[in-house]
Structure formats: structure tokens, C-alpha cells
Length: 267
Image (cartoon, rainbow, N blue to C red; front, side):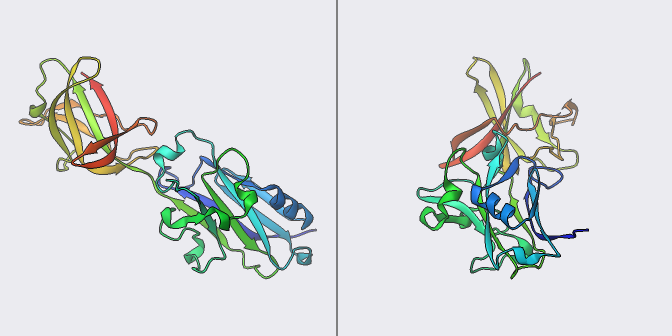
């Protein structure tokens, strides 16, 4: 009976998802990578955000001493770039990760920093051309070098960070004075400030509350904020909505352009 052993595995993690594993990415092997796997009689097992390559332990010699396994990371979610940091492109560069760089990745991490970032940008002329060919445009590119010289069963991973945004609540209600309200969690100091009354594009007036810090966009927010009366703490709205990654805006705040998540509440 043939015994297959792990040559290497690759997975993508993401802060956005509560389970940690990134479920909005597929690792797609290039055509030459597929030929390599077939010719070396390897097994490729794939799942969303994860793959593993196995070799025949009885015939490891069918593999070359060292080979390059190339994958394009393709997003299956249209909002992927909205809730993921570190994907900002630069002219003539692409995000490229490999396991044979000058800096050894600690514990299998392929990104140069704690999360995928601009530090992983590489000049396009230094990246294998097949990795860059054709649509759709990948989120990033990966090369794993492995072969008979590398039979250590390494588990590689690429960590992604959730994007941070400033949250804004616009409270619309007749007879409500925004300065008499506050946004906070139970037992927590206020992390939103009242910014005054504003006129919305539809002509209605709203009380504007803005977070004093930036929060990560998460698939399942662990904290929900409440709207309360300032002087007696009476609950007005128990669970205010949390941001949608598809609803991001850019605005200039104190001379700096920031990403914001706007939410509108009708009382």
C-alpha cells in the first residue's frame, strides 16, 4: 500500500474571520505547477484558504532535488480588498511571498512582518512571469520551493490583517438632542464623541457620533455598542449596527485622509 507523506502545506489566516482561517481565498496553481505535480506523481489536496502537497514515501526520487510550486491567491469575495489591509498596489510591484528568501520566515510565516504588508511588495521583473499572467488579478503571489532536499514537512502560512476604520453613527429622530446621548458599551468609557447635528443628503437632520479610535472590520463583531441617555443612562438602542465592509468612505479629518464606516439609524 502506497504511503503518502506531506511535502508542504500552505494556508492563509485572516483576522476578519472568527475561526482564523481565510475562507475568501483560493490558491490556484499555475499551469507549470500542475505539470510538476503530475510528473512527480504528487498529490495536491485543496480547500478554501488551504492546500497540502504529498509525495510517495516509497518513491521520493520521482521528485527533483528542488522545484518551484507557484500559486496565485484569488479572492472569491468582492469585498476582500475592503476588509483586508496590506493590499495597496504600487506601480511596477506586486505582493510576492516565497520560502527561499534571505530572511527565513519564523515558524513558517511567509510574510516579512506580522501580517502581509507593503514589506512584501516585489518588483515585477523579479517575479516569475507565469505567476503574473492573465486575469483575474490575484491578491498576491506565492512560490514554495521544495523537493528531495526539503522533506521536513514545513507548514507555511500567510497572515492577513483586518482593515481598521473610524466608525460613524448618524442618529435620525424627532425631538432627540444628540448632546443628551452617548455611544458606549456597558461599563466602558466612551469611545465615541458627539460631533453635532448634520444635514444628510436626503434633507433629514441627524446627530453625528464618531469613534475616537479605529476599529477592525470583522465578520462577527465581538462588541456591540449601545445608545444611552447621558444623564440617567437609560437605554435608547440596545444594539447599534456594525459596519458592512462594502460601505466604506474616505474623508479628510483634521488634515488627514481616513477610511470611515458610516451607519444610519432611524428612531
